[in-house]
Amino acid sequence: MSDPNPSTQEVSQTPRILLVDDEPGLRTAVQAYLEDEGFQVTTAVDGEEGWEKAQKMIPDVIISDVMMPRCDGYGLLKKIREDERLGGTPVIFLTAKGMTADRTQGYQAGVDDYMPKPFDPDELVARVKNVVQRQERLLTEAARFANADVGQMAKQITEIKSMLSHGDKNHSRKDDSIPNFTPREASVLQLVAEGLMNKEIARQLETSIRNVEKYVSRLFIKTGTSSRTELVRYALENHLVT
View: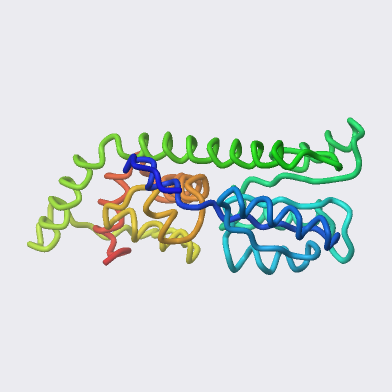
């Protein structure tokens, strides 16, 4: 279903669901129900296959059984949370276990929601929609924060580039102790210098806004800067970006 509100369209494309469960009947039934509700659903038979497919499709939500062969739900969750592209993906556990201790273990491991089997499919849909909407709210808030002074920053970036291109010696320097950047930090730095917002950087690098914010913070620390404008000036003056 399309949303007439343009601001919502930006983040409300059809959610992609990765469903991981080793029970063929349940997997087929849940997939059909979710697709009837308008979701795009990809399935996997266990955590190993789920991990492989997650890296390829970058799902919006992962629904996973806990007890599975080869790699169980906890093993899959651990891999997801440690991956820089997938780390912020909401994960919902499906499990036959309903004990409080099991739920606690899941939450401590970083799961976002938990549904004991058997479950009402309408409730599952409601919970999926809830985590999707919560994720969208977080992205919207992060984007709003990142957009706060984007116009001013863009103007300042243009001025810095102009000064450097004209060889203004008072505004161009070469730092003798340039820090080492990881490839991902270097990519984020280049995109910041191009004036992209965190949300745009996240989309281009296929990662989460939370991860982009983490890399920008690391860049501040490594370069001794405290704002995006200072960071861009540092990068341009030291020929770290193009």
